[in-house]
Length: 81
Image (tube, rainbow, N blue to C red):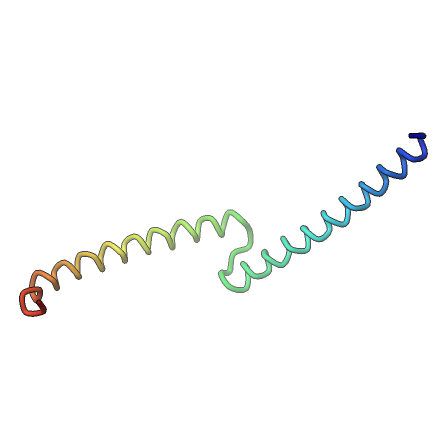
């Protein structure tokens, strides 16, 4: 393979990678805009913090539901069977 062929092959590959980078940057920009609009998060760190907060709230809500369900079954279980 000549140097020109190698150059042309590499140039095509570089151009393809530039296009791929451009597409991925566009996707990242869309995701960041959506995070801002839907969750008021300006960056990834804010989104991670919000996710941790919401995960903790979900765990608390699940524990509360399990406790209340157990209380309900204790109180009404015999009548419901």
